[in-house]
Image 1 (cartoon, rainbow, N blue to C red):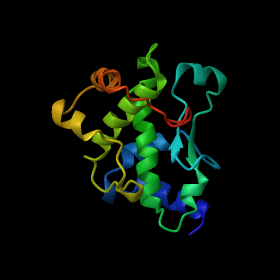
Image 2 (image 1 turned 60 degrees about the vertical axis):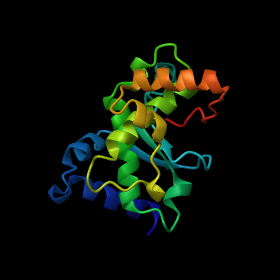
Image 3 (image 1 turned 90 degrees about the vertical axis):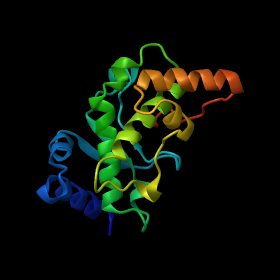
Image 4 (image 1 turned 45 degrees about the vertical axis):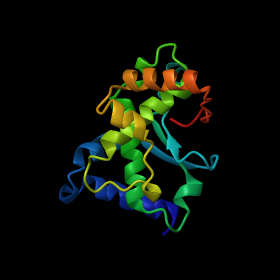
Length: 170
């Protein structure tokens, strides 16, 4: 199945009542889905950082075409990615970031979004990858993004950990 077919199939499935994802289907309709070449570490992103919005408030869900082109990448994986990106917007992660470290904030945002994404039936991230920190999940289940950030920041300072996420990995 080619890239355009996977996108079309994902959009159709998001609107079907049998999957219960119509809310996300309606929201996803407001965004362009743009497959484009990206680094192999990035599956996709939305611009939600206030500084990024000043540069490009384009209402686009950017999708790594290198992922979509893989035979094992399904339209269900694409649905999971699109919902993941929409959840960043719904959580207002760009507005809430303030002057926090981009890398740690991004990791905290992904933790919270993927923890919630895991609770939605019929969602299948690519290779069942969730960006969830298991120790954080055990210590502070259902934490807010700010709580996750504080925890990750503290762990990074204690253990001298450096976060190295791509600037476009939202």
